[in-house]
Picture 1 (cartoon, rainbow, N blue to C red):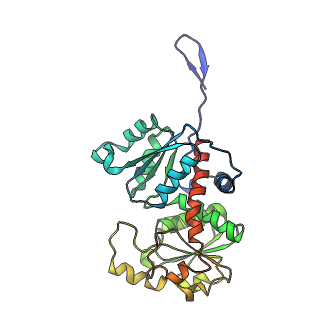
Picture 2 (tube, rainbow, N blue to C red):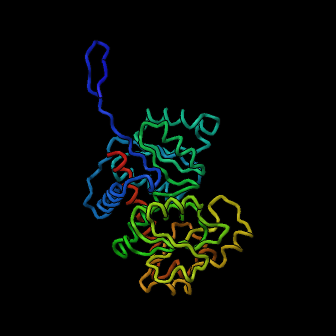
Length: 314
């Protein structure tokens, strides 16, 4: 496009598309693959050296974090950039400033904004008004950064995820929804085994089915894991939430233990995004066992997010 410079002369203005990383289901598969490939390159030492020199990432945390904060902060610094950590209580947003105004102001200072919040509407509002890339580091709706690390981890251990069977066992939470998004984008079968009262929102299932995703639902976790290449679960109570007796009663039959893993494929792997509550959603024997890849999964948050950062800022 062209713009008048005020003297009657036209100057060319380059309009660059902002690359937000909000949810897997709204990003092209080729772009997701590019991010994973970039991350693997940084992991194995073949990636570009310090591609983000001079770049600054603002990290907004409205929820507590271990892996997300450390992996983004270390990753950004290893890529040559720097970070600014902004906690909710330290910002004017906690005193009534709007998300829109926060987005506009921060966009003048930094090159990208990462946010971790309960409210997905805040993430959408931030992206609507920001003029720099926004990275979704977790909402109550989804956790796409974790899934990029999970796909990377699966493929390191079991090869291409396309056409394979992944089984989600337990609460139909934001992680389960993001696995559903990943199944659509990476073309694998997802079997969901959740209590009826804690199942994934129906509209998410319908969208996935309409997109041609192979989704199977069953209340029986033993039937679900038959032939599984990967069994995944998550904590029954998110960090900061209050545990409920009713919730635990509903989820008790969905604990991942040795007996359940024995029903999966002999080469099946076990995943958990952590933190884990041993003896609740998973036993220590499984978490520490030979099929568990949770520590590789945690490490790959660092590498996958490097790929995300470079894709957003490249």
